[in-house]
View 1 (cartoon, one colour):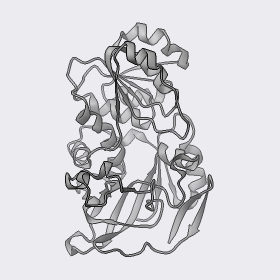
View 2: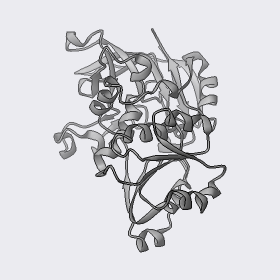
View 3: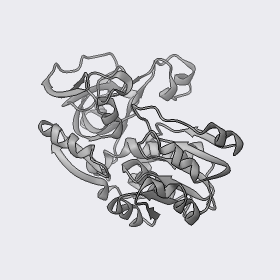
Length: 327
């Protein structure tokens, strides 16, 4: 089968063996996969990753211990737990100390024609959800995870910093909890996608606008969600917070950022790391049309055009770039 291989900060398209069969695992033919900012960071050295990347995907089950599963469209939780620790026993392998992570840590990913995964990681996609929308399940689940971590109230003043793919998903999904949520970013076309879904927006010309202009315009926020993808994003997010506010961090970066610890301590800021979310909630949002992902697709490429797809995906302000691997 064909697959994308990352090694030593370069990538190649190679013919590789089909994934090995493991007891209880399911063979999935990958239909399409989205290029995520994490995939970009992996190529730049994040997690010291080598192998097949890709974790946002939709596929069709080809082989499974349960014959009723064969032929179903599926998506997959990216964290594969050990099955024995306290986290796994609570049905939450996201923090299993021995977990592998699809396309990120010690497990091959979905930028390949086939992938093999444990049955418990798979979620069947409802027939009403198009494949082009189902590919957003993983990042949408990550966006919605904030609603499971923070007690959001309708009157909260919430700002999302960063108008990339994840920032848009966060603002458009959390508006159901906080109607006055505001998305801040540089790219007019991206901000318009959120505005089309009744999200308030503010455009900045440069990051310096976050030092004074934007904080003065919108006032101090109760909650700021940092989703810039930049290691210095946290600095600007802190400028928007009131004392005793909550800072939610979404950025993962190969580079290290810095924190103004004095401000955090003096203003008694609560910092919350936010990572993966529950697929059940994301699938519900898509099935009930609580969010529209159609405008978030920048372009679609075949696997053989990965170089072009990746070049577009890393360009500032680009939306979701999708690889098609089979029909």
